[in-house]
Length: 141
Image 1: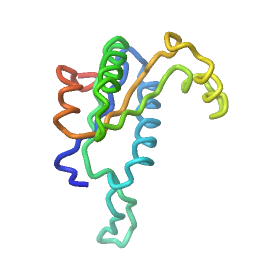
Image 2 (image 1 turned 120 degrees about the horizontal axis):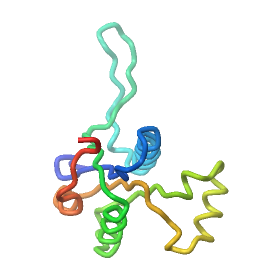
Image 3 (image 1 turned 90 degrees about the vertical axis):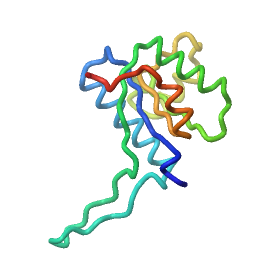
Image 4 (image 1 turned 135 degrees about the vertical axis):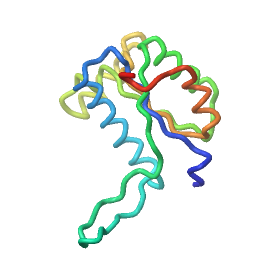
């Protein structure tokens, strides 16, 4: 992967409280890192010979959006069927579930209108990520 051609962003509902925003960002980041392992750099040993585990090679801006914008962006990305674009989402069922099994059960039985997206993560070609996120600002800015 040539990281200069790719971009990773998180887009989170800007009306959420700071604790929930942090949780959504953490969950999306873990999910992205698990699928795109090339995003993580090698471990680094500092001058004192202390090991620092690898961090992301790309900056990951956290952008704010309304729930309507989140739905629109998600639907637009899905409709484009881009091979190089990965979409990750965090929804109300993920937030409410106490176990992964509860999340699966809730999501599988939900009507599409009952799924409320609280955040999405995008990873793909810079051009398409920039188009998808045009006009959004850093959350809290």
